[in-house]
Each structure stands twice: as C-alpha cells, then as structure tokens.
Image (cartoon, helix red, strand yellow):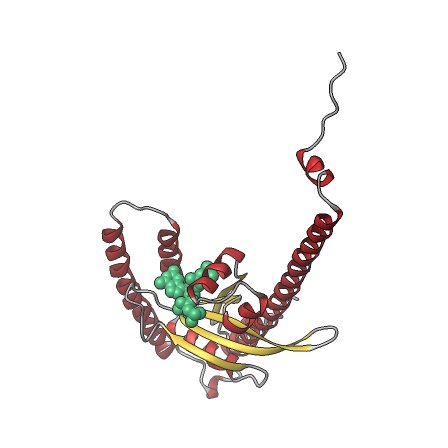
Length: 260
Ligand code: 0O2
C-alpha cells in the first residue's frame, strides 16, 4: 500500500497565506533577526569589556606577585547576565524590553567577580583598579561595611572604561564584585536558596545562613589579623646580612619568571 506523502504542519500554514500576509510575516521575521543580531553585537561588546577589566586585574596580580610576593587575587570569574535575568530586571525597574533600555539602565550586564584571601586585599585591589586613568568609577556599594540584612557581604563597583572596536570607541560599564573566599562560599549557598521555588523550613534556614555570615565575617577578620602577626614577626634578613648566603638563598627563592 502506498503511504501518503508526509508534510509538516507549517507547510500548510505558509501555503494558505495571502501575498500580503506573507510580506507581513517576512517583515516581522527580518525585524526579529535584526534585533537578535543587535543583541548579539551588544553582548560581544560587553564580553570585550569584561576581557579588558579582567586583564587589568591579572596585570595587577602579576605585578604584585613578582615585586612584592603577594597574590591578593585568588581567582577571577566572569559572566554575562542571562536573558531571563535581564528581562526580570527590566520588569522590576518598569522599563521596556529594548536594547537601549538595557544599555542605559542595567549596570551589571557585564560582571566580574574577584575573590581575594583577605579583607584588606579587597580594598587594595579596588583602589588600584579605580586609580587607573582609563577607568571611571560610577558607583560603589560597600556591602562589607554595610552588610545586607540577610548577611550578604561583598564590595560592588560599577566602572566604565573605553573599549576600542574596529570602527568605534565605546564606553562600556562593568560590575566588579570583590569578596573573600569565605564571603563567596556563603553567597553561592545563599544564591541556591533563592533559586529554589519552595523550601521547607525556609525561615529557619535563612536565620542559620545569617548567623553563618556573622561567623564568616569574624573569621575573615581574625585571618587578616593572624596574617599581620605572621608578617610582623617574620625575621627578614637585615642590611648587615645583605651579602650572606642566607640573603642569596632568599633572593633565589623569589626568582621565578612567570610563564606566559
Ligand atoms: P545575577 O545572577 O548575578 O545576575 P541595581 O543594579 O542597583 O539596580 P541590584 O541588582 O539589587 O540593583 O544591585 P546589587 O545590590 O549591587 O546586586 C547585584 C548583584 O549582587 C546580584 O545580581 C547578585 O549577584 C549579588 N547580590 C546582591 N545581593 C545578594 C544577596 O543577598 N545574595 C547573593 N547571593 N547575591 C547577592 P543579580 O542580578 O541578583 O543576579
């Protein structure tokens, strides 16, 4: 028996349209694809801005590491805000769903998270970054000095910097979140709670998390104090000993050419 030819439902749909309806559909399609291409271009630009700021931070860390044997930055992670998160933020701010609304009103499309070992490193990194003459600091939110009610701690900076593209120079905004390893650990767990639809005993869990944030803050403070004590009590070879074998050993120990 011969089977009937299989046809997709959309073939019927298009065949039944008038020429005018078809033109309208094409115009809508072109508009949709144009918007998608513009969105892609905008995200490429934010991605480039992230790369510029990331490089700046990596340069600072490399410089401090070689010249002062300090590594204030443990690691860096980057993200572009997801479409759903952008959409929700526009809605929250009562703004239209448009590229210009995103560009003019959302400061954290491009996000960089910098994880430091110690609290004072956070402020040192922030000061070194914002002192650079192509960086403009637009906003600072210090959730370390003023933690959120739930216990969230982090230093947030909105910075703007010029990025050079093939045919234009564009000032781009990037949100830099700087926090300690412990603050980051806490924020990741708390973030998981936010994304679960229903959690039994949520109130008790929130209270426990807030308590944990306090413990973490106290531990961060003590860790910094212990590091200061170690530095104060470490015996450095004094000037008289500058030519001794010990001094030579210490200098050779520091000799470590970073690989590319
Ligand atoms: P995602 O997934 O990172 O995109 P504003 O930008 O001033 O209009 P907003 O967004 O409240 O207002 O700014 P804020 O306070 O600087 O917070 C921005 C980001 O900080 C959030 O991004 C989170 O990444 C982080 N953050 C702020 N508060 C908390 C908190 O209580 N817990 C955790 N875990 N993270 C927090 P998004 O847009 O929420 O999400």
